[in-house]
Length: 286
Image: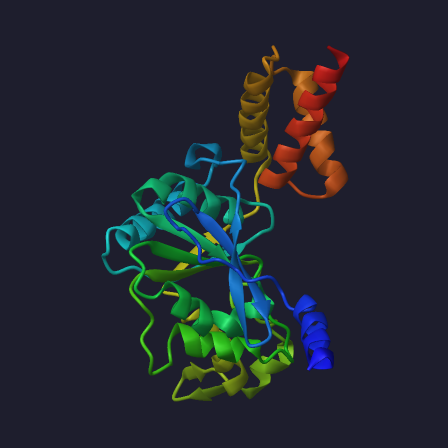
């Protein structure tokens, strides 16, 4: 018996610590931590709260997501949403800004990794019956051609006999519109029937996943004018936070353009990084 007790003591040390149930009244966001066939929710501390006003030049996208989220929070019918398009254009920031805008009305966010999407039924079981409204958020969702996990996601979204609870929606971001790589060979199986183009089975299989999202919100690369508007916004915001006096001029505009040119893209992430660099250098010199 002593040997058994010592063995159990050693084995118990290898087990993860017990996780207390989440108090969603004080927790606005959590991350799903997958373990084996299940997992648990780890609360997240929200420090940098980005508001919807911080997203410049994406008014149409904000309008679509705000309307859908407002319906969801009020208990009205709403759709799962896929935010797709160019990188760094505000897809993830928009979802986090929605949480900031609606958290006082009962909205909660659960981040989940693509590898843990097979645990969605376990996530549903954790939040079923809760009075809160949950957005399950999967950032940078994409699958490879040999990845079969997308079939699990298809079934969970729309295709399972078990109905998804009314207090859950899935918001996902991706650089791919159909979430799967599209090969030239996929079009070889297409056929013309009475003058109509019928896609092949491979294309139908790939489109079927993105069709599970009732709302598609597209994001496009920034023009130079759009990029400079975002730069000015973040310079003003960061300078105000630190009490820094600044002035927009031609030299500062050229520096912002050179920053983007060196990185080969113009987007919101690039504008935010330039603003942080410039304000930080200005404060250091001061």
